[in-house]
Image 1 (cartoon, helix red, strand yellow):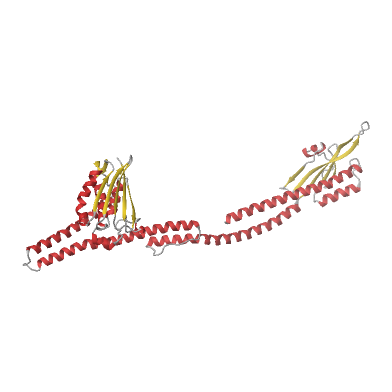
Image 2 (cartoon, rainbow, N blue to C red):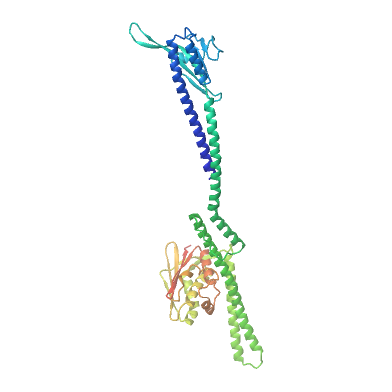
Length: 460
């Protein structure tokens, strides 16, 4: 703002001074030429070129010279100076380009801004009548070479210049003050954003940032708040994961400790009780093993150098095998498994990893279903992708949770999740595996009606 305010002011000042100077010089030239034209006529009238002793003409020339603080030379037809108001060049031959041009009828005006004077020539013409034709002709009998001082113009320009500089300084001060004020006002919202980012660098802030001052800051703040919300969600999920995993790992150990202590309390317990307790201990060991396996699987998938062991596999056979393996779980939950294939699909996939991903998705559909419900698995393909759709009639997923369900450690219903088991890692593992195959997994759900998971994987 300072530059925008000062630079135009400087240019305007220079333009005004230049315009004034040109106008003043032009007016001075016109004014002097008019007066010299009148004197030139007097010179012809009083035949001054032949008799330069005319006191009236001499007085008029001196007055003119003094009025403009200049000098006037009267040059005759032989280029000899008849009169010099300075008394220096009288009687001398004056030959110059300006004088020669003036004898040809051309008026010449030169402005010397450095030395501060205007030099001009005025032809002294006499009208001659041709006796034969009667035509009038202007004949140049002499030249008036005049120098006019421009000191008064220069003095006026200096005064105007000082006033202009004063105005410039005032303008600069005002613009600087306005620029400082506006800079503070304009940067204040960005300082809020910077401060909030610094707070995040030191630790999460509890409140979302709101700086609706400008459209730019509003866009920045919206993006910042989204990042901040994402960071909070990740932090909360990590904290929840630590609590969940600690609880999940500790619970089987606590159960086994209680069962073992019960067996060691007395030697007279029946064999059937020993068998029941040992079966319970084996179940807790399996549960512990499942939690640890899921954690290790997720860690392996997170490694950037994890490679796929691709081989040609029948996706139909893979799904049928998964459903056969999960059938006892479905039967225990009173859920019917249905598989429908539009065509045979054979493509290159990592059998172990994709098997795990589809197993997690189908097993979730069974666990979060209702007694008497069903899980419908369909398989189809086109010339680019094969698609697996897993549709259940379960409890559904709330709309606000849809964008989070693939986050690791995230659980929609924490109490229900603990009842049915699991670590909250299954969907995250499934998504990572599908993404490793350059595929996508999406979900649509209606609370109370069920969910549909759609897996699309490129054909190889």
